[in-house]
Image (tube, rainbow, N blue to C red; front, side, top):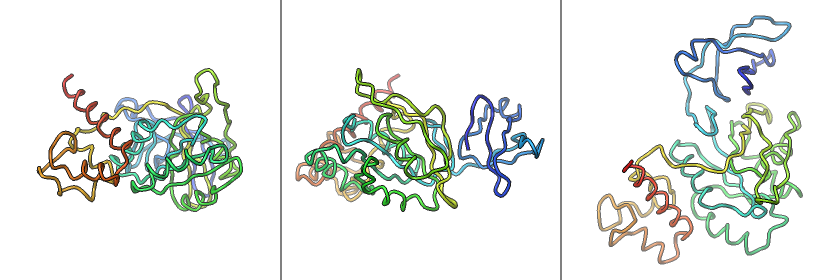
Length: 287
């Protein structure tokens, strides 16, 4: 459920939470237990609820940052305003989830303090790119119930920069673990980090949410630039319709994606972020 300073807290169905140390073999094999891992433990003291973590079972998937495993879906949370959404970072989150085959839900918080223009702009950019989109206010609870419905029966990782209301959202979805919420740092208009470690929080039967430390940079590093286009869902209908086979939708003439962009069928912001990430991956190859 969480790991702090070399202790791993493991939930055993019907028995409760055990505080465990990992066997030395894991260090030797350079394997680290992750939040979300399914594990086998040896119980040392039933009364004290202590044990040894003996084995990590095979993972369905894992993320490096945040370091979590066995995720059914990701809830990517940004604010509509205060702080303004960094769309390049947001698209990096979505690309990361897409590359790991983790379905993503996209949520924009602080609807209550946003103006209509900001809301319309976000709907315009993200309404048509293939992700369930939620515009919510944790403060007034508007549309929070919709999110709750999407999390039932799943293990969901909540991801996004700090200061956007992730901890407040988690607090409103369950009562068991109250997360510390932070204020916006006025000096840099970013959230102060409040989550110190990843933690798996029960929302109900077979439903968990993973809270992860806030982070504000995500580098696209795990794959080739040729694969990037497949991480932008809205490009899919145009694949195979370009003049050149294997078109990367960058400089090639007769590109169906660029034609769709010119006709206003694709988001300019999303396409520009695609090009920026593509160039970044291409540069990486040189070094």
